[in-house]
Image (cartoon, rainbow, N blue to C red; front, side, top):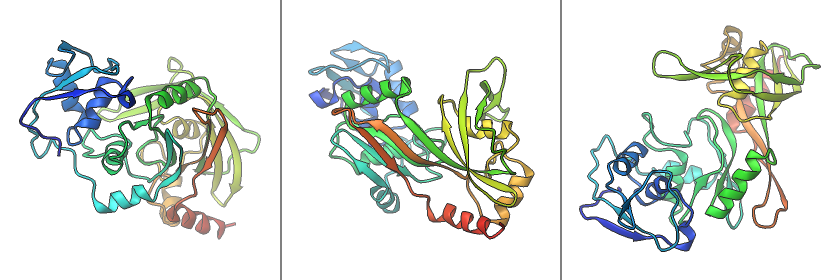
Length: 315
């Protein structure tokens, strides 16, 4: 647990250079929630070379970071990684390079802790991989979405991969099971998306003419009685983009408790689906050091395979 009774003075190493202050602290303070890290930075309790800093300030080799003593309340501490989660994550690594790794993220695991989530994938991996000085998400997946998730093991790799992502040089394909028979000729959905407060503190997304531009390519993979297995490729990277675009096209995803339909809920129960059927099935990116293309596929878990088996029996 990240709890100390004395001030720590930590010198930034070459492998940690370029990190944001908040991410550096999250790595050092493995029991501290993100909200606490932001609070101690905001209050000036964290200093770099004896000067106040912001959470997004970048660190340089040789910088000396002052970390204040922390005493975490039990409800505030990040949970230690359980043996089950440790084993699950260890077995979920699809491929690993010198300065990156791809995880087949399990459904139901948030990528970050916070908002009632005691531990997320990144916090858990930092505990599991204590050999790494640097570990950051290159992109995110929704909590209920499974599949390919790319992480950087160095600041240089993170910057390179983030640039590739912003310049649309990284390709991500998803498998989604949607309600109804998707029209074969409809291979593209373009609808602006806007985030809003659903009224209970929950953030959702809707199609709105004043929202941000969002485009998704769709292709039919397999048709069933009452549902269609789709391949979806987001051209843009908006929150809940595939889910909202599919619902906008009148074919919401099965197992979607936010944007789903009664038809989809009925089929999900009938076929034994208790989670969102959305899986990041493949990821293609340029290796950050050599520039060579890397393509990785993540197999469906047993739960989703069983659902497809049930769906095929309805043909």
